[in-house]
Amino acid sequence: MKISVVKTSQLYFLLSFAGMILAGTGLLHFCCTALNWIDAGFTATSAVCVTGLETVRIADLGWAGQLVVLLLIQAGGIGIMTLTTSIILMMGHRLSYGGVLIMSNISDRFSRQGTEGLARMVFYYTLLCEGIGFLLLLPLFLLGGGITPVQAVWYALFHAVSAFCNAGLSPLPAGLEGISGAIRFVIAFLFILGGLGVYVVYDIVTSCRNRLQLHAQTRLILAWSAGLLLAGSAALWLLQFNSGRPVSLLDAFFQSAACRTAGFRVLELDKLCAGSMTVMVVLMLIGAAPGSTGGGMKVTTFALAVAGLYSSFKGASGVILYKRTVPPENVLKAFVVLVTYLLLTAFGSILLASLTPCSMHWALFETASALATVGLALDNPEAITAGAKVMLIVFMFLGRVGFFTFFLFLLGRSRRSRLVYPEERIVVN
Image (cartoon, rainbow, N blue to C red; front, side, top):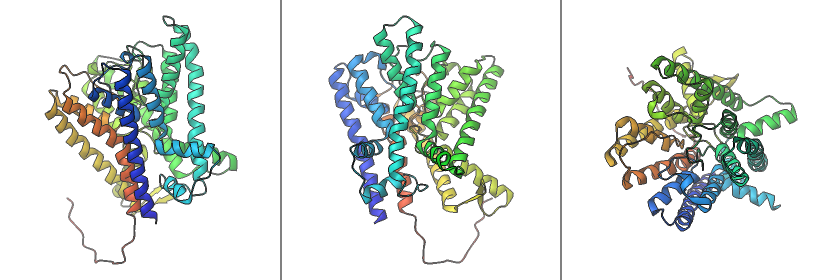
């Protein structure tokens, strides 16, 4: 029964996102008649998959088009399945056993009894963070000058939702370039909270309420997220300083955090040194935490792979984190996802370079950004072809939805063999 429910959840998740993208494409084409179908589909996919890549500026879509984009970001950020579950719960209905089983399969760390509380947490946590972000951003936009109060309200609302959902889309004509440091700080605060994941928040709340110790997964996410933020910021600042094109510590911190799937940019990426671009690609592929609005292979996947390598170098027989033994199949799945991401990035880069006139480093950066649903992009002197846009649409969809269904596939395939075969060692060096 479990495997059939997993298959149902895979199909439901894929169809719900695909349906939202198709509906968004139609609405954008209707609201913005100058927008062709491919650009409308690209924008809708970028919004639903909270990626942030653009073929047309959001500022050029008008109020109606921007409203459609905002709604698509919100629906995609929360996740269609989780949003539907939350609505059902808010109406006073309880989940069926099958529905609870589908939801609990998102993370095998939570029991079926705690799944409904997790779904409520998604809804309340999103509204709370976005509400606080809106209240903090509104006076900053009002004090900034040059815009009307109505525009200030709209910009504050749009950026609060886009930042928390790690979408990286902005209705400002120049994006966040030249925006005040206070607004950048609030936006960075929002997408960091969105990238932590609801599992971390749920565990922190329940642990504080019941005076329990945090789970190993939560401690791993918090430690590695902080470490990647600091290491990424320091690396960008030092590399740019060494190249003779220094950036401020605030900009280095913001861009490092944004690489973990937020997609906003405050630096001219094309003027960064090669080392900085490499660091950004690595951060993009690692991504945010499981159960978050961010993408990428997820920080837990990367952390487990590193822990597995470290244990192998030590000659240990298994991986131990925070006095907890990690099952070998978890470590193996981490390596499967990591290798799959690297292979897809390499394949996508070659394919993109063959579909549109561009340099190879542009193709690599764009592919990693689409697959990890980040949204950062370099400038390309040549116009992107329709075939390249379709390829990026597929990679954005795959990065947002495909790896979730891939995870459920691995979960559904977990089984113990009744046969035991003799061991034989394979030479690996």
